[in-house]
Length: 122
Image 1 (cartoon, rainbow, N blue to C red):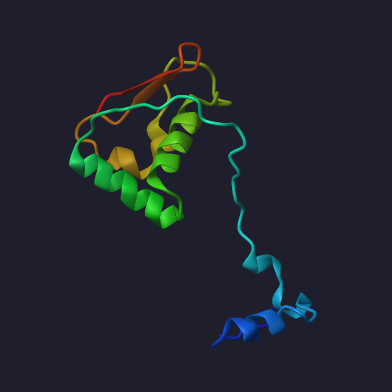
Image 2 (image 1 turned 30 degrees about the vertical axis):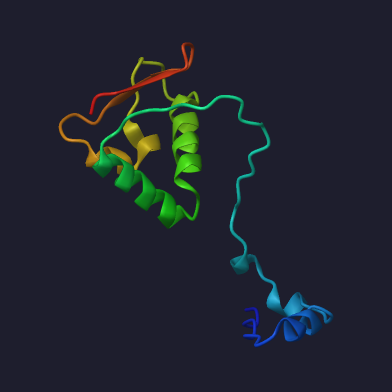
């Protein structure tokens, strides 16, 4: 169990705190995986979606602590990533998670990585 970090009233107090051994304050519980984006983005996309869908995307991104544009990009990348399941031409919307619960009707998605397109039946 690690010690809890104190609350500092001034920047000077925080700087002085950093001059000591901080190993008592570090534990594996304090770390979370973080995904870095190394590739530059060369293209932008403009798409029209309903306000409700955008609000749902923003809510999920906020819960994950990332900007909603990054969440959309990560969701598209995950949907197009080849799965280890047998190729049937269709896969479920597990990559789209909570967003597909917004959709009315069928929530199955088909992704074809060869053409890099994503089709949703929402």
